[in-house]
Amino acid sequence: MIVGFARHEWIADVPMSAVDQQFQLPTQGGQIPSDRFLKSLLLQYQGRMTNPSSGGPTGVLADAPMSIMERIHVGGYHRLRGAREEFIDIRGADLWQLTKLYAATVSNPYTTPKPGFGSTPASALNLSASAVNDIRIQFLLPFTPIGLPITQQKSWLLDAPNYDQLQLTIYNADALSVFTGQTTQPTFAAFGSTTGNPIVRVSGQYTMFGASRGSGYVPGRVWRYFYENVASTNLVTGGTGLREYNVPRGNRIRCILIKTGVKATTTAASNNAYSTLSNTIWSNVKFMLGLNKQIRFWADFYSLQFDCTDSYGVTPDVGFGLIDFANQGTQSEVLNTVGLIAGPTGDTDVYLQTDIAGASGQADMALYEELRGLPRNVAVVASATAGGGPTGS
Image (cartoon, rainbow, N blue to C red; front, side, top):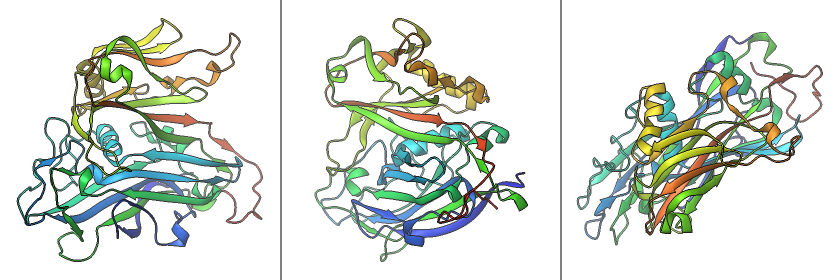
């Protein structure tokens, strides 16, 4: 029995001591604490960027400042399933947008300065010579399919006690993922200071099972990962009725976050950000289940965005659209593709089709939220395994 669903506890601060590098928690060999079940992690980036006295930034990227968090990854070896699972792989700007929509916030109140996407980039960022920009951003990293009732989210909690080497990896970007035009890079320091380093403050939202500690309970797993097309033939030349993404099959698709715009060419080679975002690149968006059989159809990107407005009370920012199969609050409506691979009639095609207004430099991204497996109870737990069996006080 659950006695507390999301108890907030700080875990550790991760110093961002260098740009364009990856970092893990400074405790337990970089591992996420694995003594209890987790609903979410909270990642708070905070740091200062100081512009040079000359040759500084002249503009701001559309993804900024959230794009300073280049990538967030969570994975580990699940002992009961006997497999390594890399179940979270997401960019900071896209995670921020996804959870903002489900939290129904017009703008994240814990973001300094107030951000914006697309036609209204983070204009509060100061471009003046020698100016300082203190940036604080809250990223919610849920392990459950948010926007659903707690009774349904329970089925997808992160059973951390069942994992070995369960690790959070944060990929830190640099000033080229925030600003444009600089010939001399802004410098990084601690928030509100001229010294030190930015940090990512990591906290957990723990689920408390009381005396049972969740023993024997094995939830399913939410996977979030993305594919991206950059300057492909479809995006450059355009056309009608184009197959843009093959949708993964074999599990359950809860939602797909779509992003369209122009990819920045000034970022570091290992980093990614968008210089502009647009609602007019895609139109006649169709979700196809089998050839020539549509199960969703939006005449334009604005119609796709309104679905989110109607469901959650907030409109996606320019360039973002949410295809949500559980927008009425019930996971029974998720798209079940389990039987679409090698079924009684063979494989069934599942893909996104759209008309594209072609132009050079364009890119699009599809971020998938996939539900894998189903919750179950195991009768016997092998406590001899390192780290113990499933628990969750």
